[in-house]
Image (cartoon, rainbow, N blue to C red; front, top):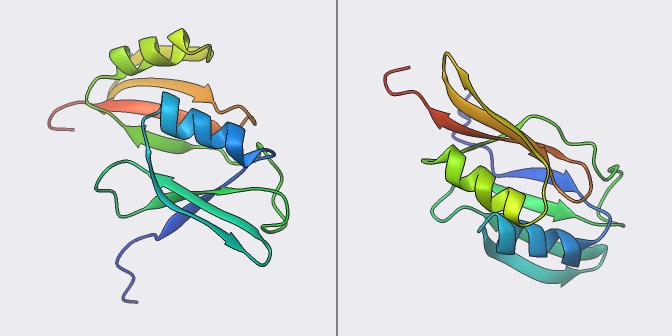
Length: 124
């Protein structure tokens, strides 16, 4: 096996414009692709400098159920500040909680896809 990295993670959404506003304007991710394809709009976002991007797959872009993605971990340097930003934008956040591997919180995007924020504990 010679796998080097994951290219993208699919996040099924029902409304790509609404999802884009959340991922770009609330989470601060950058748009890496936004183009029309024969089967629909190809829309991707990612943290600056990331090798793995998130494809916001709308209707027609595969057999995906909006809100079905779970366990997407986003690493942050300040989980508390990010939780405050999410809460201020109207997103319900659970946590943050202190865990052996770091400080972690969870939330969902507008479609119900499950995401987590983690500030890793140094040396873990």
